[in-house]
Length: 354
Image 1 (cartoon, helix red, strand yellow):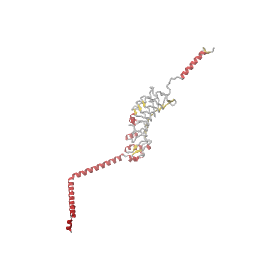
Image 2: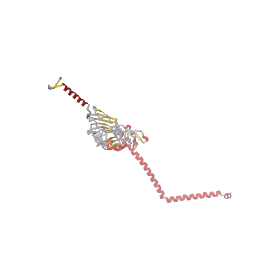
Image 3: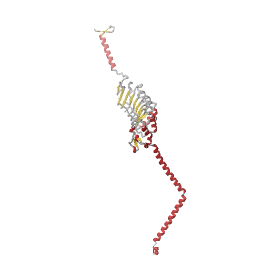
Image 4: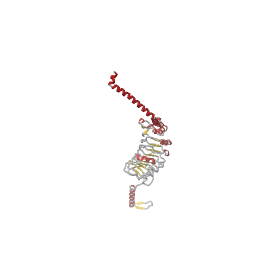
């Protein structure tokens, strides 16, 4: 019988070696095809690219954020899903913080963002929530995003959530925010109360319903010299209320799309670029003086009327006598006419005359 010489010269039967060899092969096969899931596995219905650190999950009926996102993910894209509510700690399903730097949540039908929805994303730099249907935004919706640089909310904020946006965009939650995009949300005013407490470099408010930029907002713009404000495709009302903004627009380079800002009212100025208006078109002093002049004219006419009535009242006795004299004179004159008429109409008087 053939024998196998071991490392120390021991001899084993060849049949025994063959048995152990098959056991070794079976163990290897079991390890290769084992269903055990590792931490590096890709979530179902997602595409993972470990080299670029990107996980893309598109078009699904899932109502929640996937709970098995790999820890190496630096870019997470969730799009075309059915996530109506971003719940508290939506990205901490596994109890650990992710190292995600870019998070895209556009086109997911998101309606509500609950407090602390983005916990576990302390390193996040870019957050895109564009093209959703936000009806409710908690004041602490973005709490914990201390490293966030860019926030995109284009065509996402419904009128019900517009008033809540001011409280949600607080410096306590977003101390390092550099770029804020709010295009296409039908906003009627700048949603930030004080711009001087932000580190904004770009504020995009294009294609909204802003009719005027008040003096307070212009002061905030002046305090943030490095900030660029984009305001095209808004229906500006070119009247006296636009005066401070008009002169800021003429003397500042902070609005890169200044040439595309057009008047919508009044009718005579519709389509005219705001920066091409004349100073008197938005001069509050002229408008105020014109209004004051009309008021003053009305007061003068009223005073004249009062004086006239007082004169009539004080001379009521003389006026009465004058009216009586006129009446008596008219009566005497009428009696003379009546007497002549009677003489001319009597035929006997006519014969006597002949």
